[in-house]
Image 1 (cartoon, rainbow, N blue to C red):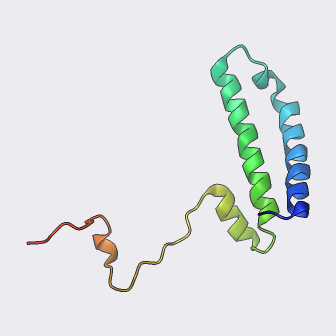
Image 2: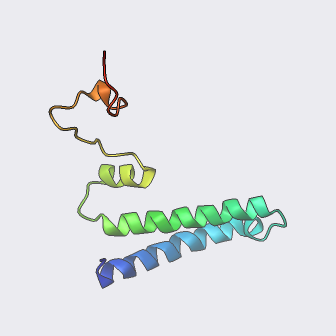
Length: 95
């Protein structure tokens, strides 16, 4: 669970980012076109996500935070007995 100061940081960061975005995208947010409004809401949701990631990752390097924000998957370590080329086999028997 996040500490209170982390939650506060999330709120302040999101408030700042969202305020700037809303100023720039007010026409999109009030558009008659539902698809345009949906894209604008999606952008706000992404800003909320970024605010949370940045607030929760003070212990990481800037590069690691960037990877989290961009959604770059962390490398998964396979057990030593698993061949990386066989990951898709999923139990298929070889003849």
